[in-house]
Every structure is written in C-alpha cells, then in structure tokens.
Amino acid sequence: MADTILIIGGTGMLGEPVARRLRAGGYHVRILTRSPDKARGRFGVDYEIVAGDVTVPDSLAGAMRGCQGVHVSLHGDSAPDLERIAVVNAVRAALGACVQHFTYLSGASVIAENCWFSDTRARFEAEEAVKASGLPYTIFKASWFMESLDRFIHGQRAFVFGPQTKSWHWIAADDYARMVAAAYVTPVAAGKSLFIYGPDYCTMRAALQQYIAIAHPGVRLMPMPFWAADLMARLGRRRELQAALPFFRYCDKVSVHEAGDPTEANILLGTPDTMLELWSRQKAAQSDSLNL
Ligand SMILES: NC(=O)c1ccc[n+]([C@@H]2O[C@H](COP(=O)([O-])OP(=O)(O)OC[C@H]3O[C@@H](n4cnc5c(N)ncnc54)[C@H](OP(=O)(O)O)[C@@H]3O)[C@@H](O)[C@H]2O)c1
Image 1 (cartoon, helix red, strand yellow):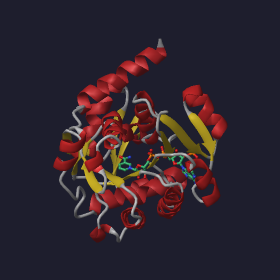
Image 2: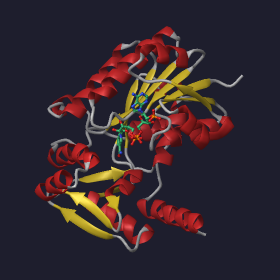
Image 3: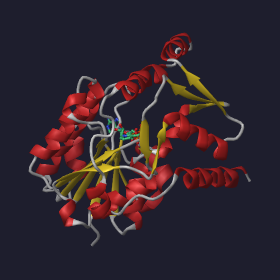
C-alpha cells in the first residue's frame, strides 16, 4: 500500500504543486482544508480531501491518522502567528500519529536576527518547534517563488512597492515540489534545514519586468513608493494590500535576506534549474491555451 502524506495548505499556491508532485510519485495524498467541497472540485477523485482547521487540534489528529508524512505549507494572511500555532499543533498531532517525516515550508530570511518582524518571528518559532519535536523533519527555507509574480499584477498594471533594491534567487514552484518529493525518499534529508534557491538572481522589479514582457505584454510596470501604496491601500480599502505592505517593507529593509547556502539542498534533492524566462514562456503558453 502507498504511503499517505497529509498536506496542510495543499489548496494553496505552493501546497498544490507539492500535492500534485507527490501524487504523481505514487503517494496517497490527503489534503486538509477548511473548504472541502471546493477542494474536491479542484483535485478530483485521486486525492483524499479532509475537512480541518489548524486551530482545532482534534481535526489535525483525525487528519493525520495513518499518515507516514506531513507537509505544512500554510499562510496565515494577516494573522502571522497562525503559522506558528499551526506548526505547533501539527507537530503535536504528528507525534501522536507516529508520523515518520515532517516537512515544512519556511522562508530564506528566517533567522534569529530578523525576528524583529512578527511574520519572521512566527516562522522562526515554528521552525524551532519542528526541530525540538524529535520528529524526523526537513525544513525548506525558500527564497521568492516565481508564482508570486502573478500577485503583483492588478488589471493592466504590475506594482513593485518601495525601492526593493535587493536581488533574490527566484524559484519555480514545480522545482521546489520536486525537491520536497525527493526529501521523502532521501533519508539523509531528515534533520535538515535546507535553503532552496532558484537559478535566476535578480530584483523584484527585474523579475516582474521579464515576466510581464513575456506573459503579459499589455501590462505596465508601476514602481510605487511606500507612501503612495499606503494611500492606495487605505483610500481603496484594499485589505489584502494593507496586509501585504509590511512584508514588502520587511523585504526592502531586512539586512540578511537569503540567510544560507543552497549547496546541501541541491546535492541532496537536485538543483532547481527552471529559469524565469522559460517559466514565463510556459505561463504564457498556458494562458494562450486557456483562451483558445
Ligand atoms: N511567496 C513566496 O515567494 C514564498 C517564499 C517562501 C515561503 N513562502 C511561504 O509559503 C507558505 C504558503 O504560501 P502560499 O502562497 O502557498 O499560501 P496561500 O496560497 O495563501 O494558501 C494558504 C493555505 O493555507 C491554508 N490555511 C490557512 N488558514 C488555515 C487554517 N486555519 N486551517 C487550515 N488551513 C489553513 C489554506 O487552506 P484552505 O483555505 O483550503 O483551508 C491554503 O491552502 C507561506 O507560509 C509563505 O510565507 C512563500
């Protein structure tokens, strides 16, 4: 019988590619969600969908029954501490269910000295809870995902908030998903925190410019200072933008933004090699085929 892996956050932008990669690799994939009907419509009969909420420990205990692996890829939106609570609750449930491998998506800048920012502190404490649990674990400390670039686009404009002068190693979610799947069959990946960086190293502005030039040629790049973004968020009552701006300020200001070396991850799990240009072309081809 195939091993069962529970994905918490499997309906999310970065959880779904992991779910699909693990399923393609022959695992029985169980997805925990607060909206099971929606998830069933999206994933079909090849996936087991269970209703649950990370803030309700009983729902986690039930969802983990019979699972060999648990992957957490959760986003708390405007409640950053949700991620810490989720991981603490998931670790406890995983210990009860005798889970053999616990994997967690964290971030490349999650280190003690960046804990002045509440999201980073929540993730740092989540990582500490995983490491202290005694469970075999792999923590993925990923840089910016190419998939995030779609979230910068609103209508015919693509916004970059603040100066954003730092460069990041942009990674494609499919490459990362392949690395997560590899961790489940690589015993030496257990007990590791691994830095996951893609092959392209450039600023948000350069990444977005390249992406829209290929996949959204009608869209115009709009660099916007923070004060104007604040105004736009407040006057337009854009709660999503209000919630996102502190993170953009953090990305602009953080002193160590990619805090480790990806060599070990690349050796153990295979080097991610999808370039932004190819990824953008694939996205353009996908939207062309949807528009046919
Ligand atoms: N974007 C990047 O470049 C980047 C880089 C490094 C790390 N990350 C991290 O990756 C993680 C995932 O991000 P994402 O963009 O994939 O998130 P997302 O698309 O916003 O998805 C959020 C997921 O969290 C689940 N969720 C939220 N609250 C829940 C609750 N109370 N109980 C159960 N599930 C809950 C949602 O499930 P339902 O709604 O179905 O219940 C959904 O699957 C985040 O921690 C993010 O910080 C992102």
